Length: 86
Image 1: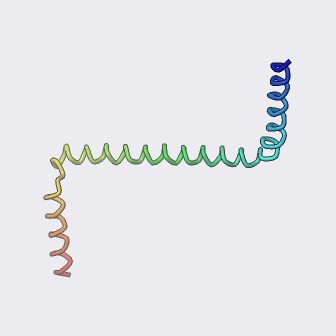
Image 2 (image 1 turned 90 degrees about the vertical axis):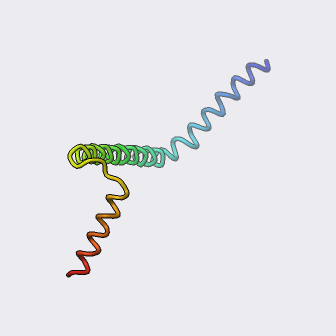
Image 3 (image 1 turned 60 degrees about the vertical axis):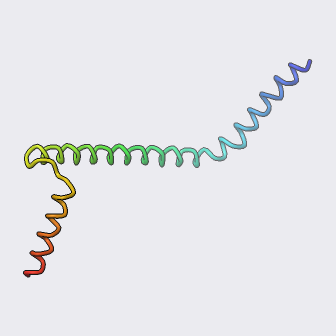
């Protein structure tokens, strides 16, 4: 008898949960799912952009050699001196 009562209670709670939560908030769930899909798509686009930039950097490093911080500081100094001359 206890198991039968537990079984009925389980389905009553499930039915109430379905009626009260899912049906009333179905629009919210759809909106959340849409936002999640958009977020995932934007992450995929970002990853694609990053991989294309990494590929371009690899091509530049093959062509001109490894880019290091010393190169970066030299480039900054050259830019600063060219800005002073203007």
